[in-house]
Amino acid sequence: MTNKLNVLIVEDDENDSDALVAELNANADKLCLAGVLKSSNAALAFIRTHNPHAVILDLELQDGVGDGLDLLDKLRSTILCPKPYIIVNTNSTSKIAGKSAKKMGADYAFAKWQKGYSPKMVINHLLLVMSEILGGEEEVLATLTEDQLENKMRDFVQDEFNKLGVSVKNKGYNYLVDAVILAAKGENQNWGKAIGEKTHKNEDSVTNAMKYAIKNTWNNADINNLQKYYTAPLRKDKAEPTVIEFVFFYKQKLISYLNK
Image 1: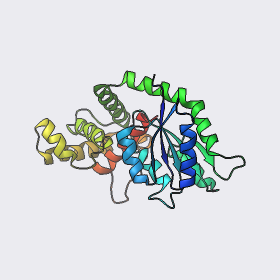
Image 2: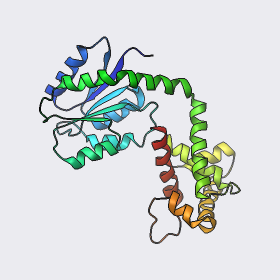
Image 3: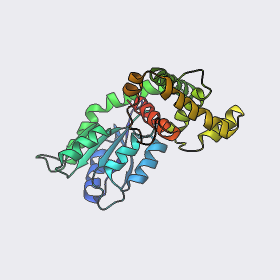
C-alpha cells in the first residue's frame, strides 16, 4: 500500500490555504501536498494528469478562477481511476449548494462558518479516512490494466444496449459501443472518422450505420424498455435521439459506473 496520501488544495483564500498547508506539513509522515491551486480549470487538468488521492475544494473561488461546483460537474464526466476523495469547504449557507455538491460527487463537506471549524478538522478527517482511500486505490490498481478497463467499459455498454433492445445484427451496434467508449475517454467528436480508420470503413458509412441502429431500435424495441432504460428527454421534433444525444447519454452512464 502507498504510505502517504497526496492531497490537492483548491482554495483562493491565501490565509485558508496557508493554514491547510501548515496542517498538512504537520502530518508529513502520512500526508503529502500535491499542490495548491486557485483555478477550477487548472485543478481539473491537474487531477487528470496527477491523480491526487484527495482534493480539498473551496466551492466559492471568488478571488480565483472558476467555480467549485463547476469543477465537480466536470469531474463526474471524466474517467478517474481511482476517483479522488473530495472534501468540500464552503462559506455558503445555501442548502441547495450543499446538496448539489454531494450529488456531483463530493464525499464530505465542511462549513467554514460552523462552530468549532478549523483547517485542523479537515486534515484530521483525511487522517481518519486515508487507510480506506489508499486501500481502495490499491484494489483498483491491482485489478485494472488498460486492456481490462477497456473490456470493462465494453461489457457495460453492451449490457446497457442489450437492455434497451439495440440489435446486435445492426452494423451500427458495435460502432455505437466504440463511440461511447471514445466519448468517455474524451473524444467528443469525429467518432465516425476514428472508427472508420480502425475498421477500414468509410466515415459516412459508419455514421449512417449508427443512425440506422438507433432508428431501428426506436422502431422495433419494446416501448417499455425504451422508456425505462433511455431516460434522457427527446426533442419534440424527433422520434429518436441523434447519434450525439445517444452517445453522450451512455457516455455519462459509463463514467458514472466507472467512478463508483
